[in-house]
Length: 404
Image 1 (cartoon, helix red, strand yellow):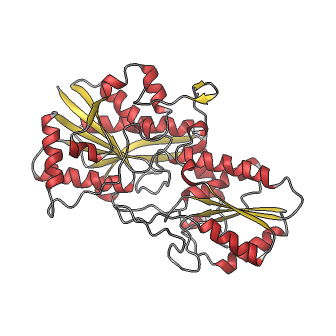
Image 2 (cartoon, rainbow, N blue to C red):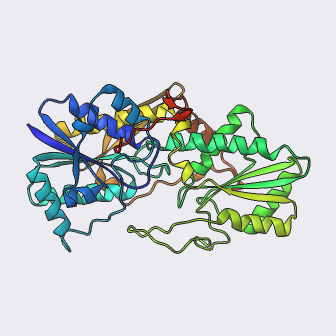
Image 3 (cartoon, rainbow, N blue to C red):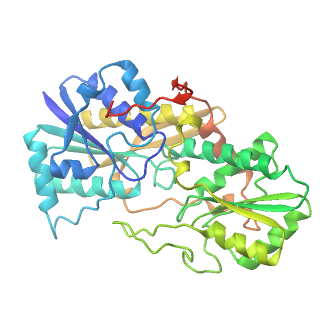
């Protein structure tokens, strides 16, 4: 008998607990696995020997069902960057010691790009010191920017929330007779997948968002104003979706707060306000900007059933991969077809994933750089379909909590 550990890292999503559920359920029925440890606050829990036994927390199928539909990270998260072990091996030695003391033979890390850096480094260290511990990456991120996978768990639910909220903004903006411009700022530092996904409204006959701007396309203030004025000739209430990471007149993150995380990423905010003031000054109509902010990440009340289901499946596939002897890999989706929608789950060498970034295809951006093509629409639609059954209490969705 041996034990395993699982941790969650990076920004929360509506589906990351579903991947945790997938790891737990598959491990619970796998012969030879005894304790299933949850590492509190990502890799920090492994360093500090801060574990909980998930078998004592998830005691019924009802618990698992509630957990997989609960947003955010039940185990907590972190943005902790491991140093290269050749320079400083202290963290690795602590982790190895903790894993040995708990007889942990496999470690599953649910996270995005930066978390896969941890998977790669940890797997490399274990092999270097000849310690037989399997390390498997389980992808997640609302940004959909992880390499070698068709899409990431968490993205579909975030895209569904963005589109639904955008539709409600459209309804709100059209109640008055006066011209207006609404700028919706959507998450996406270097990759515009989430902003681009707002195009799914076009499949339901909505003309808005009339304009979509992504970091992958050259953006200029002058062209933006021209686009707004041209759109106003057709629409009384113009709606523009703008990624937080667009470069305005080639200025790098001109609205960044200046705060940088452990992996060197700047926290972005404010491009919507910047463009709002520009439209107000140059166009003069009623204008407002709306920053969706963190609500995009954990809105499980409008989650995608496809997303929640796939997140559990890819977590379970990670356990099977480890039991089959794989290590230093991340589980990935490969799309077989759009209609009918079919995917398969494979594994990818972690070196092809870690420290890389998958940007939105430029061929899916229109010639004017202010919208996306039908190929993008066909890619997004299957990922947002279906609605999980949500349990309510006193009119509010019920969440699984460790403090209950």
